[in-house]
Image 1: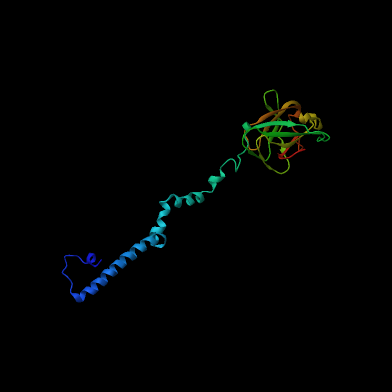
Image 2: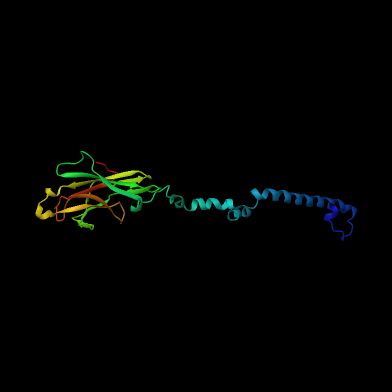
Length: 224
């Protein structure tokens, strides 16, 4: 070891210095060995600069950043947060529940069935009005909303309802009501700009009904 530490081009050391050279050689080897063992432990607890950099170089270092940077990426999937129901995925109809009518009015239940393979959401009130003339001409004013809004998540194949009350046209003064034959109802699902036609022949007030609307509609999720 001492020979490798002292270059061969130097002159031979005197006997009285040889001991110090041997000691220096041992110290040099000790420093080298310490350096090697320090390199092994420095990877985990050595220089701070080398330990903090690998976050951009290793896949494991970059993974947490992508998972915490945008939590909204996991909430955009349809299974977690179903989208609003569109008319294309709904079967819209109406039923007349027995015993639900009152004097001078009739109760209808609008039905909304999810015909798609995924769930969807209906939130609030349908839009409802009478149509006639065989061409979809609106008769009178649209239904007045009543009660509180509700939100319904429709699973595939499931149905929800919304209560509609229809006052008899004969309950209003004929001159102001101007009763007209209605073909049925134009129904907009909540939030939709597309409507379905539901056949319901009756007499509708084409004119004014004053402060008492002929049609009232409750939110989805209501029954008779």
